[in-house]
Length: 65
Image (cartoon, rainbow, N blue to C red; front, side, top):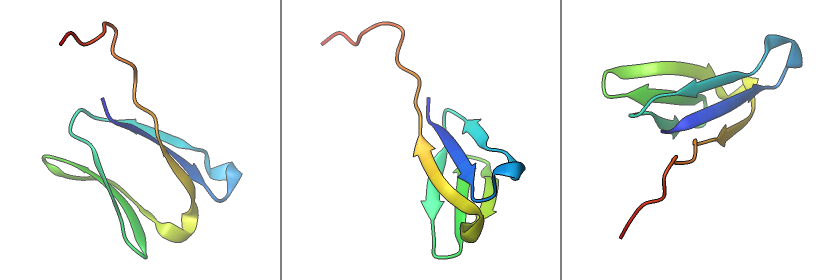
């Protein structure tokens, strides 16, 4: 499942972990936007974001081919 850890530039604001099976990240020069099939889930001004890291959970069982 897609999951993103958003680290804010100011540590006192706290970091955000967001996950959703249909989550997508869109970056522009002004915004970091996360959305799913229903629309925007979270939008953060780019100047407030120190980093965005994709953190997906590992599948519990291996894929068979």
